Amino acid sequence: MSIISMRNVSKFFGEFQALKDVSLNVIAGERVVVCGPSGSGKSTLIRCINRLEAHEFGEIIVDGTALTDAPADLDKICGTVGMVFQQFNLFPHLTVMDNLCLGPRRVLGLSDAEARARAMSHLERVQIPDQANKFPRQLSGGQQQRVAIARSLCMEPRILLFDEPTSALDPEMITEVLDVMTELASTGITMIVVTHEMGFARRVADRMVFMDKGEIVEIGAPEDVFTAPKSRRFAAFIKQILNH
Image 1 (tube, rainbow, N blue to C red):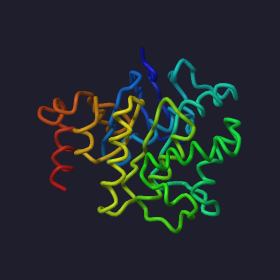
Image 2: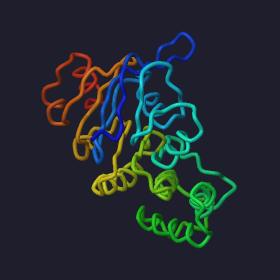
Image 3: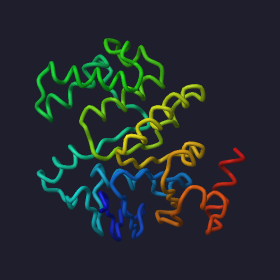
Image 4: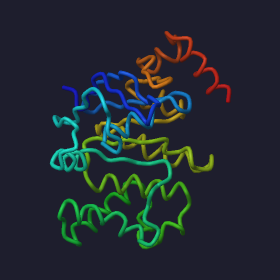
């Protein structure tokens, strides 16, 4: 059964069409890596899945809920889908612990003690429990991104979306974040990851999705698309990335 189903989805920003008749099914527990050149629609795709962007045409069904503007549908999506952004998006005036506890308390109704216990559990999972009482500015970029991942996990989502989670990091910090994501992938949670980290894709992904100019150009298993891409556009993209 598909946990995410996109059928003929189109998205416009003014006259610019960011997504062009996109269809994609993701099975529960599947790990999908989305790649493509800048402006290809990758981020728009996953932002539509959690309703940060509203699509104009087509249908998106997430865990049995069709995405509309109905408040009840939006509440369901907030409880089902977690998002990790490129720029961390942590509240700078709150400690790490308070950043993690805010959603579980306000959205899920957990007590302070329950929220703190859950937060500490996930900080241990991303290997930074000793940073709980620090503020984001006191952390490295890699640590901040791991806090952002833990914050998403505190909502206990069924689906995790990652929007280029390592692109804002220094090279030495990328590995620590990818290691956490690799561990998460082994737990069976559904993941869609927008990234150019091809080593991670080959190691973790069940499927690769290549996008260009708002369209899905190619989909396949990592080994298939890396060794024998079907489209010239994907072949050129892979060559450029691997030679970078």
